[in-house]
Every structure is written in structure tokens, then in C-alpha cells.
Image (cartoon, rainbow, N blue to C red; front, side, top):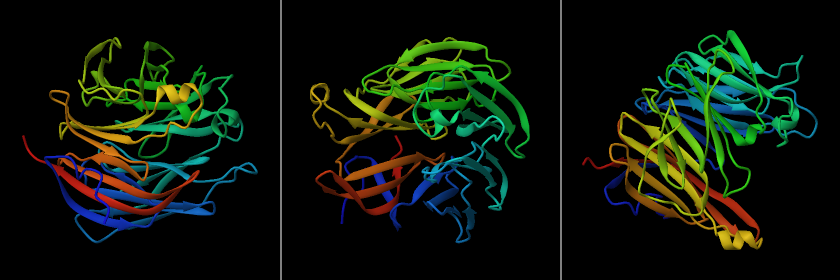
Length: 359
């Protein structure tokens, strides 16, 4: 049997391992009480909301919206609200928001038929839902939004439209992330570089107007707000802390991932942990256009000292996406692949739960 992704990490114990159907996606509520498992085909999708303490579950069926010819529908992302009460399901051309306790869909946000703009990346915080709306060329393809984008704000529980802010964002949906501050008084945009190594642009804005608080260039591809809204934590080659008021770097981790890309960060301050994923590459091979696919690395940090307590390499035949819970668990979706020339075929998938030993 193939080892779990963190089996080489001392001080990390595996609690459970459950096989799931290949192609299943996963999301975990911040408190660790709920799992959302989702699957899709081009004809529709299904999300199963499963509480971890009972055998009961809710099933949500998704019917794809009308899309332009040649565009394939799929579930792109599933996100719990910070308090775990709501679930946002982002798909091609539509966003659904459901009540977690009942599994009922509360509302749907779709394409604006008048302006022909599409709902893209989203963020949930403080009873607010923020959604980036893109023109077709920046949503269905990766062309820069020449005419800008809109950030629309809704009441998270009802879907009631609150306001819209036009913004000049010279990027596309695939390379842009939005995150509301915990009190929804600010939002941050990260425009990732389309080629690595490169500098991303992180900026903080007011949701009342297009007032920009600051913008900074940094080598990072993912970030989160701290729980008190005073800091942004960003992941590039290192884990760095930025002052939310000025954008100035306050501190950084000692661990350096070196030449890496596809950074993914998740933070749970109640557990005092952060987990990051990096994909390694060779600068030399990339400079001469050779294949440079190498292993990925999973790193687990304690936030109080920015110390890396676990570093686990993953070969190309394995992948892992991890969530942290307030109970100090690490819940991951781990997949194994059959590697063949020019192919990487998915063989199996498991949900694995770990716990970090107390200091």
C-alpha cells in the first residue's frame, strides 16, 4: 500500500484513511465539522455535505448554466464561510451558495446578461460575499481585461446585491485571487505572474470605493488575511507576514523553497498552523526549454515562531491538497498517478486525517 503523504514527518500521526472515487474534490470547514465532497461531468455535478460526527449527509445537485459553444462546464472550487455556516460552489459560469446545516441552495449568481460578464473568484467574510466579474475573454480565456472588471458585493446569507466597484485589473480570472478581510472592511487582490520566476502584485482596496490602500510586488502566489485583519500572510519561496496597513514585510520564515511555483497556502490561527505546497522546477532546464517537472513539497509551520515542523517531498506520482482545522487536524485529499510518457493517469484517491503532536 502506498504511504500517505506525511508519513515521513516526525511528530505527525495518521488518524484515518478513507478511499474515495477518483476525480472527487474536497473542501473542509475551518472547524473541521464538515466535509464537502464534489464530482462533476460536463452534464452536471453533485456536492455531498457530510458532517464528521454523524452518518447523515446532504446531497446538492448542480445543473450547468447555458455556456458558449465549445466551453466545458465543471466545478472549479468549493469554499466554506469562516464560520462554517455557508458553502459557496464556484463553477464555470455560475456560483451557488448553500446552507450547510440543511444542504439547501439559497441562491445562484450567474452571468450578467446585459453586460455579458462572468462571475469568477470569490471570497466570504463577515456576512459578505465578494465576487470578481470578468469579460468573456478574461474569464473563458486568459486575455487581459482591457475594459476592467467589476467587484460585486452581496449579502452572503441572502444573495442580495449591495454594491459594485469597477476596477482596472490587467489580468484574467485564472491568475487573480480576491480575499476579504475578516471584517469585510477591505479586500485584497493578488495578480499572479503568468510565468515563474516572476513577481506577483498584491494590493489592498476599500469595498466602498476603488480607493487603493497600497500595492506591492512580491514573489508569492497565494495569501490569507490574519484573523484580526492586521496582517496578510503570503506564500512564495518563503512564508512572509505583511502589515495590512502599509504592505511592509514584518517577518518571514527561515525555510526557503528555492525555485518553485504553484504555491498554495492555508492557515488556521486557532490551531496555530499553516500548510503550504510548492512545485519545484529547474531554472536552468526552463531557460533552455527542457522538461523541468520535479517533485512537490508540503511544508507545515507553527505560526508562533514561523518554524517549519514538517517538510514532506511528493514525487510526480503523488499529489496532496491539505486543510487545517481548529482542532489541530490536517485533513488532506491525496491522489496517486500512473506515470507514462506524456501522460499522468489518476489511479486512486484517499481522504487522510493527521494530527500534529503537541509541543
